[in-house]
Structure formats: structure tokens, C-alpha cells
Image 1: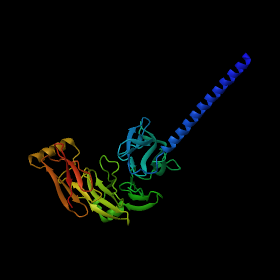
Image 2: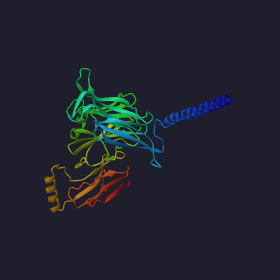
Image 3: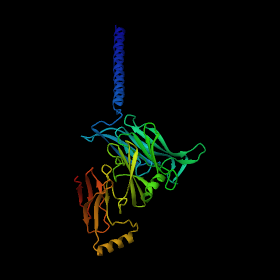
Image 4: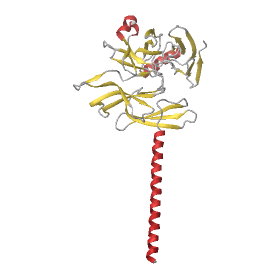
Length: 359
């Protein structure tokens, strides 16, 4: 009888262990399934939603280059919805661009940061990161690297611009003085050249604006890149040192271009409104570059009662508007376009004001 009871107890114990083990297994299995489902649903769609925006943070990597963290956030709550990061970002004033359906970055590989020289296999590449690829990305263009013989070749300058609709990629090739120096616009899908404008052609029409080509960039705004909002026009400028020589506007509807010599005294700190063609002007201002001489010139002007004025001039119509003035000589108003019609600027007191174009 006792043996029979012991067998029953053992059987019940084994049954309990079996049931407990099954429950634990089922729990773990369901947890894995739930985790898998959560991982899958956290994958972002290809493009940003209407209530989303992109934020970023670039940090210096101890191994060289930069690390950029990308955050997709809700516009209403600013809460992070999705994020990823990528490395080997080139050190540059404009290393990346944020767009609706992708992020574009210039990456640099095999570069000795300490000795500041390229290593075997060195390359500079343009990469695209779509919002649904979990940070994997894809190389879309070689900017510089080694050929089959190990010779280093620079195909394009380390700069680029993407239009707002992500149809075109703008690059610069060559250097001032080379026969091929100029602007190249490629189709972003095919990477075929759609438009090429070389400095030799510009020189035949307007020799007075021959200089280094620069892409338009808004101070502190990585999204501002020389393209008009709808992507119809693309603007570049030419300069010699701090002096702006001229501006070129390319029309993507017919691939024609217009050249506008810069008004007198337009310097590197003056800012262009790419929507309407207004450029800020500080008449009489000069760039000296040597602090002591600059202070001497300020003192001379101060004694003669020469202050600083700020104007805006339309490159297309040549219409000029007075904005403001100060008694401070050689003052830089730090102009910044807030919209098509609003210009923010700063007085010597630190006060910021807004000028509105009434048209």
C-alpha cells in the first residue's frame, strides 16, 4: 500500500514538473515571439511621415572620423520614435544632408588621423541611408580613392548638394585653373550627368566672376543647401578670398542658367535668399584679415563719422532696399533669412531685429 502511494506521489510530482516546464517553455516562446514582433514593427517606413522630423548629433570618434546619431522624432511631442547611427563621417563643414526619404553622408575610410594622411585602400564615398534600412546604408558614389594601379584619384570635390525632391545630386569637379573645373548635376537614380557647366564657359561670358566655386550654405542650418524649395532652381557663387564675385542660377525645368555679377562689397558673410534672389550688402565694408590693421581702420572711420549700413539687393531686378544702419564702423549685421520675406539681423548692442520685404 505504501509502495502504491509512493508511486502515486512520484507520478503526481513528475506531472507537476512537466506542467511547470511546459508553462515556462510556453512563456519563453511567447516572449521571443513578442520580441520578434516588436523588432519588426519598430522598423521605420522608407520616408518620414507628416508628423515626423529628423534630428542628429555628430561626435568625434576616437578611431578617427565622426559618428552621427540619427533620431526620428514626433513633431508634436518631440519624442524619439526611431534611431540609428553610422561612423566614418568625414570632417567637413557640410558632411551630410537630411531629406524626407533618406540621409546622405560623405564617409572617409582608411585615413590616419594622427599623421593626417591616407592609408592603403583610402577612399571617400557618398552614402545614402533610407529610414527603413536600420542604419545599413548603401554606397552610391565614389568621390575619391585608388585606381587599379594604386594611384590616388579625386573624382569630385568633397562637397555635394541634393535637391528637396531627391532627384538630383550636385557636385564639383576639377580645381580653379584646370580645364574641367566646374559644376556637375547628376540624376540621383542613374548617376548619369544631366548638366555640366565648366568655368571655361563662364569665363567666355563673364570673365569678371571667374573664381572659386562655392555651394550656398546657410550658417547653422544643414538643410539649407542652395536649392529653392520646390527644387526648380539651384544657386552657386564664385569668390576670390572673402569677396563674392558672382552668382549662377540653374533652372532644372530646361537646364538653362543665368549669371549675375555680385553687387560691390558683397562678402562671404552676406547671405542669399535662393527663393527670390535677394542678397545682403554692407556697402563700404572690407575684409582685412589682420586684427591690428582692422582696428586701425575702424578707428579712422569712427573719427570721420563713417558707420555701417545694411541693404538687400535683388540680383535679378537690381532693386535695392535700405534695411538699417549703425554708427559702429565695419559692423557685420550677421544677416540670416528666416523666410522668403523675413531677414533677421543683429545690432552692436546684441539686439536682433527682423526686416520684412513688402512686395
